[in-house]
Image (cartoon, rainbow, N blue to C red):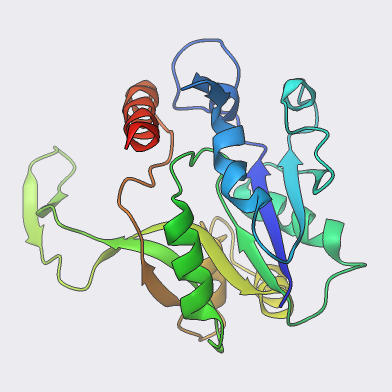
Length: 232
């Protein structure tokens, strides 16, 4: 079985305050966010290539210690996540087989545990669709009205929070991302694109600490997590 990894890293970090580098290049616990995100895949058996999909004028990637790793190549992404994942698929098209597995992992998720990655691969090994890491919701959910007052309490039964990696066969994922979507209706993740084909990706339970760096306080939380894991 062959595995290919695509890491979309062309985002502009619109929700992060300040004028520093994009969030994937912020430092935490001795490495950049993106290097933590990529690290679990470096030692993945049968990993053919890791494609890091960058913004057109990215000036930060070449400064990373992993930039010259022999397993890693780069591609230029687009304005939206789906554009960057498509660019990653084009980058491997000449070498990948239709039934090879492709794992897509957010560049801003530095807290992926090796055990979660192994569980995802093991549980999907014979799956006909593929799937994603996810965490069941535990908080009470409220739907708000236009005045930010509670309109309703939403039952959380059977609701999960989507994480990454998300893992699908190359042929299926390529077909799903090439499908036409209405204006403003592009998929927000790979699973949604596959769902639009009428298929049901499998949810594989993952650690809820596999957080995505979105706000400044997430850096502090991720730093605490990574330091506690290395100390244990």
